[in-house]
Structure formats: C-alpha cells, structure tokens
Length: 90
Image 1 (cartoon, rainbow, N blue to C red):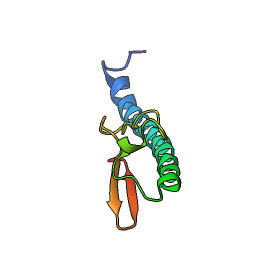
Image 2 (image 1 turned 45 degrees about the vertical axis):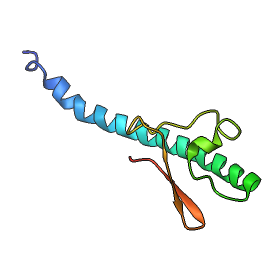
Image 3 (image 1 turned 180 degrees about the vertical axis):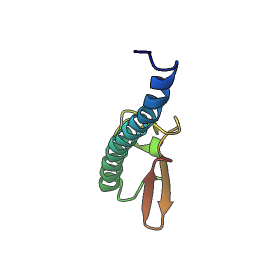
C-alpha cells in the first residue's frame, strides 16, 4: 500500500483547523464582551451614565481593557444616544 501524496493530510486538515480557531476566537470574544458589559453596567450604576471609553472602567470595574481576539486591539465601545454599543470586529 502506497503512502498518500506529500501534504495531502495537511491540505485535508487545514480548513478544519481554521474553523476551530475561528470558533475559539468567537468564544473568547463573547467572554470578553460579557466581562466588559458587566463592567459597563457597574459603571453606569455607580456614575449614573455610560462610559465614553473602556479605559474609564480600569481599574475600578475591570483590571484592564479586554483585547479583541480578532484584531489584537481593545474591544470597541461607542456612545449611542442614551446608551452604548460594545463590540468585537469579529
């Protein structure tokens, strides 16, 4: 029995690994967004307003600004009327 052509297994497995990485990144982003959302809610309860930037939550409500696993940059926060939008680029 002849071994498979060089790289065949790698070519077969690589797409699946990409999907695993994306799924793990989404899970990480979700967890980090939840932590930041809870900190935003605590900030709002204490200050009676939403923060304009996530760094306003450090260190009282968060130990550091969570990093977006998709961009390597901080998660994003945008003021929206009387609320705010917290998101990941992924």
